[in-house]
Each structure stands twice: as structure tokens, then as C-alpha cells.
Length: 121
Length: 172
Image (cartoon, rainbow over all chains, first blue to last red; front, top):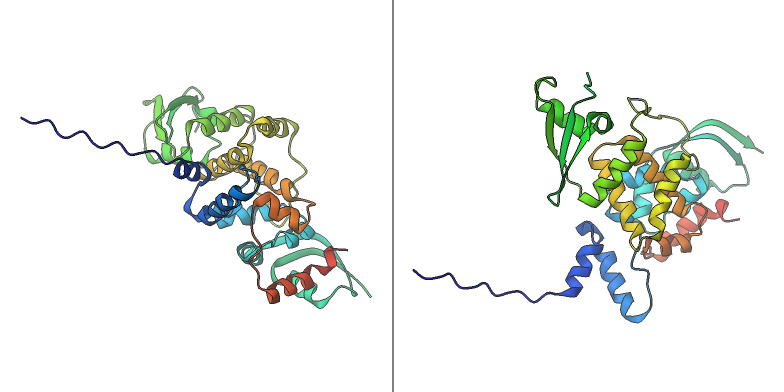
């Protein structure tokens, strides 16, 4: 009878450990990589909200609680822009001044349903 | 039919287990369905075990919230075609979330609780935590939002110009 060989203990890799702790799902890997890169040069907050790691419907759900203004601004990158564009919202009351650009009105028409619409000429 | 004396043992993703009353778990669509799927007679089986894909630390927070909200009306009132707002979080819930402010990983904690509320299908907790997240970026500039969420601007010049044009109305 022979004892099985003792398994070689793996040397712990702190970077991998940090990455794991900060990565709730694989989809946020690129953000984490960026963070690590940034960390070498400057002080970066370790604790941030990995919004793109959330399922799309939860990002949409969060968007639905934002004001129209903030929701438009929250299109901070391609993914967020796509998700915002694909979500449907309801706005109780919308006042449009005709001086607003057509680009804005086109944007609103895409995915916002409005309770009361007032247009100023 | 809910038997208030019935208790449910939840086993967490990291191997812990906690037993809670059915009065709490009835607010979780996931746990309720799991119990229903077992097709057991609630009277005959006073204790059910349900495995949840949530870690122990997060489940403790979820249970703390459920305990406070045990008497909430069921089913949870779903709002359709009604303007949603993020500034109507009840005082207890606000204090509950603010307690994490002192934690080093407060954002990760919020992420964990949102994900848990989604997995366990606890609509009230999901709404409240998503509102909390919305409040973090509400009223912020685009640059501040990028900073808070640690997201890089990956638009092309053309796309950026398009967005600026669309957003022109809200930037003055």
C-alpha cells in the first residue's frame, strides 16, 4: 500500500483573490481589469457599484426610478445607452416647449409613454 | 393557506443555515414556490428546507428587512403605468441602508442585496434597493455618474455628438 502523493499546495495569488472579491459576475471583468490598471497609477475607490454586472432588467428597473433628465444623462457608455433605449417608461406629465430640439422629441417618442402632454408654441 | 407556525430552514450558498418563520418567507416568491413545489401538506410537515443561492451575510440582511416588513400587504402592489419615483423610501428602510455607509464594501453590499432580492423574488426589497441605487446617480452630471459607477466612456465621436444633441435640453 502506498500513500497517494501529497498534492502540491498552490501559491496563493493575491491579485486573483482581489479580482474574485470584486467580481460578482464575469461580465464586470473588463471594469475590474481597468480598475487594477488604474490602481497602479492613482488612488481609486475599491468599492464601487458594478452596475453592468446586474441583469439587464434590473438596470432597466433602476432606470425606471430616475427622472427623465437623469435617465438621459445615465447613458454614460454604449451598454448603458442600449439598455436605456430598450427600456419602456411612463411619465405622468410632460411639457414640451417647441424650442426643444427634434432630437429630444424623437428620443422621448422611442420609449416613453406620457400621461398628459402639453406643448408650448 | 399560510400556517404561521410553520418554519422554513434556508441553507445558504456558503453552507450556513437559518430557520425562519413562514410569516417572513411568504414575501419571497422564490421560497414560496419552492415550498409549493414540494407539494407537501403544511400540517404534516412543520419544517421545510429550501436552498437559496445567497451567501450567509447577505441573507442575514434580507431576513432583517423581511422581519421589519413581515406585516406588509400581499401580494406586493405592482405599479404599472404609473410614474415611479425614488424619493419615497420609508424611514426604516433608509436607516437600514445607511447603516452600510460605514462598511468598506457598502456598494458591494448593496449589489449583493439587490441580487439576492432578485433571486428570492422579494419585490418590495428589490424596489427599495434599486431606488437606493437610483438615488446614488440622481441629480449627478454625466462625469460624476461615470466616476460613481466606474464606467468608461466608449462612444465614438459621432455617437457622443448624437447623445449631446439629444441631451441638450437637460443640460441647461
